[in-house]
Length: 533
Ligand code: GDP
Image (cartoon, rainbow, N blue to C red):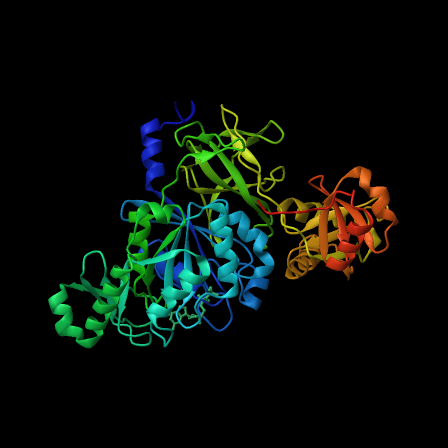
């Protein structure tokens, strides 16, 4: 096999590059320190020079992954950035996920493109709602998880209690690789449970510099830290007795999770996170196609679109499709085939996206993320390949729970209005639902979280120059139905059937009781939940 006629890389070369890749996401509840950690990781890997070089979020240091104005105003992440950095002999691709639950569909797409995840837990708060949701998505997709207990510099829970919580609520066996020396709020360092050694951390001014790290033998640690060290050793022995030690196979299967303790803001424990990813996290490996057949990493180029985005800032008003490379070498300028249409797609403007800055890239290997510019034909889930056709599994669409009708405020702007709606639909920002009854002038928008509507309104106004009004509809539930059932459903009060742009017919109901009423009256109807698979 080779990676294509245009490639100057041998198959062995491609395999070696894939084996160097660690493509992962950080999943966390908002405020757990994800942006801080992202920056600390990049700082340790020396990818961006000085942390906090980009200014954004009001009142505090901004990070490279903070983008849109809305995002900055609200202090949440909406867009997804991909950061690439090198550490030891590995190339890391860190895919950013939005923290807010309203954008869980975006998060799901990003998680379809990673090989592993880091679950960030606030030491004082334990597992929070959004962490649990994201954890479930990872579990569902078989994404292995490394757990990082963050903010250990602040008073928080007992470490053993945190381990119990992880085990009880996720079902994964926590297998700490390090154990904290000093209670939360008095973070001195960690006991390395594999070597028995002590890594002592010392503060530096501010978060922009690397923290001091020194390693000592256990005897010296006991002299240095006294009771804090003894406690750590005792607790680590307790974990030993419960067999809470790292096991690669169970981690990869999602049955256990290695645990680390850190303080992202002080840069404590950040090297250890990178080392753990290098040593234990899965590399880019053969991806199964839609039929379950794995495509080897040294097969000709292939990849899939996991995110489409436009209008990120006024200097770049173009449309960008993020592609996860699955096999072969991506070389800028290569012409790939778009599996959905069979049409060629020229990749003249491939870019690596790095926060607000973009860099043109020349080549990318399995596990890497490429941003394709002017990608108006590409949709989320689409596969691209050269030579040997492949279609990767489609990325499922969530069941919408909020519905609004959208109309152009000014009918003379209808052209812009239509273009905007189509664009937002393609990007997967919102689901667009139509019916003959409502016509094209007033389509229905379906969302998983109401904040998606705010993004739509904002972009229709500012980006597409088509100010629009949105009006809430009294539906909260969608079911998949079939064409022959439409006449029956149409006769039911407060039920509406609309067709989504992926061809699905969706019957909308005000609530569960209304749905149950219709099901009882017409047991013969097809009304299936839209499940995420
Ligand atoms: P995100 O919402 O998950 O991206 O969280 P941020 O990175 O924005 O962090 C939220 C807040 O927690 C900020 O005020 C950070 O400075 C603070 N923070 C992050 N990591 C730590 C940490 O390790 N210790 C302490 N004390 N604060 C932290």
